[in-house]
Image (tube, rainbow, N blue to C red; front, side, top):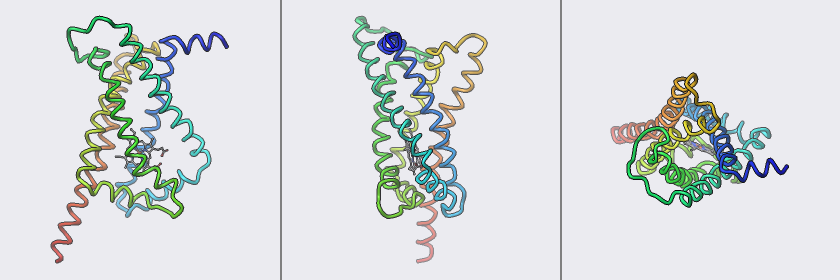
Length: 228
Ligand code: HEM
């Protein structure tokens, strides 16, 4: 028990926990993206609604959700603790910025990109998660999404947040592998490729959704104007 606590209180213990929670959150993002791609099914949201209903009614999913939110909280708190600790133990400021793996710029900005993602999550959960889980009458998640993304400012906010998410994942992914001791010469090229798939394709996949609904609304408005 003592050795577990000692591990947690050490910086490396916190980093390992941060890496593991970060990787767990990425797995969620993959599942979330795959589910959200159903929005493109061109069936007026039928499959997306069915997927949403499954998430709401399945007790296993509801149970996993608890770990998801715990993961987000633990990841964020540890990030802040490590950031404060690093600042205290780094009396001399860096002279240069190098946009390389683990460069001062990438690791220093992780806290700020993390805060932006936190703000994004708050707004995102308020728009979609709360209405779909905590309202007495049945809410159509397809309509929620369609309505939210009919606002070009909301779309722009999503695109900026996803850009920040990509940057956060890019650093986070490589840093996690380093912390877990997986980044050696043999695995490095494979891990870089895997990291690229995640930090690039996940945000691009999510970004396609507001872009799609923006053009969808433009097309519908043009059609309505054409009829009148
Ligand atoms: C633009 C694309 C996105 C759409 C259309 C979307 C849509 C939704 C919807 C409808 C819900 C509530 C119903 C559900 O659980 O599926 C939800 C929940 C959630 N979203 Fe998103 N989302 C998007 C992007 C993201 C991103 C980029 C993140 C994280 C950075 C994120 C994190 C979450 C979380 C943590 C929940 C609550 C947990 C859960 O539902 O199990 N979403 N999203």
